[in-house]
Length: 185
Image: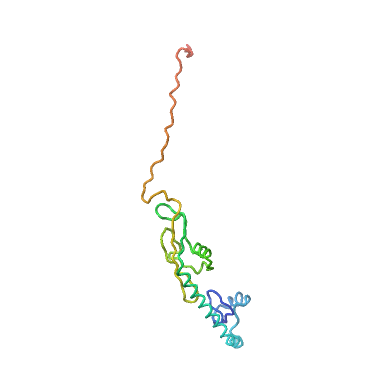
């Protein structure tokens, strides 16, 4: 079933796009929410008359994405995560962790738009993260993961056995011989 999108629908398309979707998806999801209209001669004429304003909005989105890309690529994020002496994290850095850190820097980016190589980072280091912006525009952010917690343990240092204080042992009790009971005959 052909529909014309009335609003941007992720991941289907943008406003004004003509898409072929399942009848149930159109009838039960897109039409009731006002996200799409049936593809008819009347709706095609309506969208043709709105084509200029739709293209102007798309151009504005492209411009905003270009400006955001420049800001994001200049940004370097440092995350402090609990880690062991060997550099392995006690947990992982996920796209949600990166999205939360970007929110602290006043960037509102959905976690779904942040792509981590390998889906998560499980050790300290420097990583490049890809952020999807608009259409084919992507930004790369540098994320530095630093370990915290076990600074006193040096890498490769062997742990010594814990020191245990000796426990004093009491001498065996002696029974005096003169007060011992006599043997029964």
